[in-house]
Image (cartoon, rainbow, N blue to C red; front, side, top):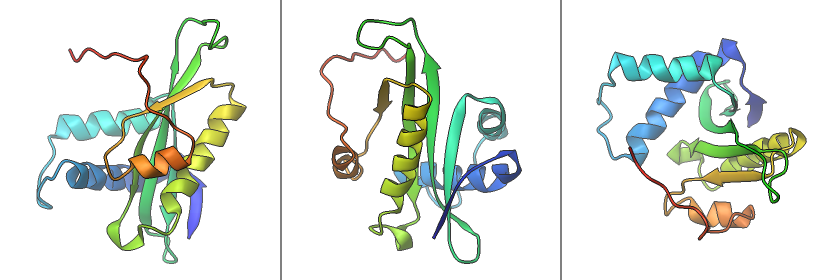
Length: 150
C-alpha cells in the first residue's frame, strides 16, 4: 500500500472515494446519483477548503481509502491557546482492504500533520464501527460539547 497527501491533481480520486464512502456509511444503493450541486461543493472544498486529505492506493495506484482533516480557527482559550482546531472526517477503506491498519495509518498521518501545525484539539464524528479505531488512537468521548443542527 502507498499513502500520500493528496494535491489538487488528485481531486478525481479523492472525490470518487469520498462519494463511495458516503454511499456505504449512509446505506445508499450503489447506483445512487448525487446532486450535481453537492458534487460541485465537495470538489470545491477539496480544491479551496482548509483541509488536508490522505489517500491510500493499491499496487495499481487505484485509490482504495481516504481520510481528511478539516481545519478550523476559533478564538483562543486557556485550554487551546492557539485557537487552532481540526475535525477528522471521511476515514474510509474499501471493504476488501479493511482490518489491515490502513485507516489507522491515514488518521495517524493527519494527526501528526495537525500537531505540527499547532492544533490543540481534534474532533470527529464516529460510526460504531470506527469507535474502536479512534479509541486506539487516543480519542475519548467528550461530555463538554453540545451541538445544534440548523
